[in-house]
Image (cartoon, rainbow, N blue to C red; front, side, top):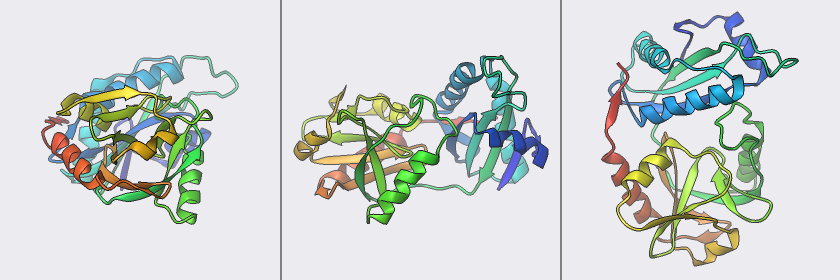
Length: 260
């Protein structure tokens, strides 16, 4: 893995402020120096920077740093994480508008496709609309699910509405249409691309956990791939593999946007 900060090789002193655990990021896959939904990733970073730091993010500069980091790593295919934090942020005066710093980490590419069995957990991320660096709770929920014999955790609100997975969005199919749960969650880039390209009826609505008994299939998605949910809380979803293939076909038609 290679890590740069504001376009230069990251030093220890650059990384220390990140330990404050206040910042946000986006994760993406690069193929042939191009990204699907690159504009969505940059928009996510700009919006969260304004909300968390009260400052504007130069997305053209960020994109240039992303391309530069990829070149320095000597890779054309990669996994990339872009993290925005600030060495000037002071938790004692959090309302101050401060300039931000950008870490770009480049590592080996991944493609998630293996089906999973998940269990529900009543839990919600803080500021769920932001992809922030406060990931302790969601990874603890994933660890608990694995210890119980499942592959991951699906979050449900206190009033029983399905929201999102630990690091992924999901859609279910009732045999007639695709349903995207409407609850506080991080709306992912893969979800946005799938919504835009889906062929067939789809709907966004509140989806209660007890409604899963009437569902036939489900898939999970994030920027690293799309995979079938073979079962939720032990309830088999026999149509999930076919639904996942349909979703992957949609993503295969999405154009790749060059980093440079």
